[in-house]
Length: 251
Image (cartoon, rainbow, N blue to C red; front, side, top):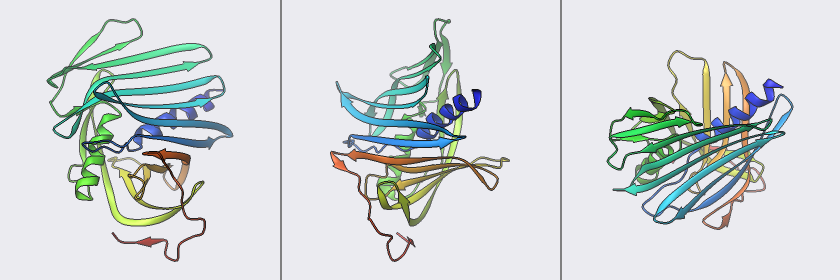
């Protein structure tokens, strides 16, 4: 039973690795995903909306008798996402867990609380993000310059600040997906001294939303998350029905 619970947590982590498009005027979207690992089917959804002068980015993963959700509320400041609040909720066999981070307006500190436990204060550098809003900062760089000029991001993870690093492969490639063939770019997480890999494919023609995520350990794929449908700015994501003549090219 523990294996499929772990699978569910891997899926929500995968969704967290997926990018959320950000500009000075962020395009809303709703995306649907599916993954199967060890015979367990997990479905996920990711949504970006504007509300009351700020933005809300949320994602969920669901399997039998279990669910995980994450929600980030943030504002744009000088074209960059500034986190306001991040909420993580998990329910397994009716047992609930909630974790909450809140961020100071000046970016100097954050707080963390799990369930009804005492609140923990966290001193933070100014350029700090929550587990979802840092993805927006990366997407801004991809949109504005076509590459990741910055590779390292400081993320408040529960009660501490952690560093995450990514690199973008500039070469594009065509990827077959449940919605058809899509033109993509790869984003890879950098892990030192580890045989684990996380590879993310982004849809070039649909604001670089996530198409597929693959977790690998050595030469083996542990888990693959696939886009099954969605809308970006009200437009359905639809790929080519047949494979393009060339499956890889350069920008």
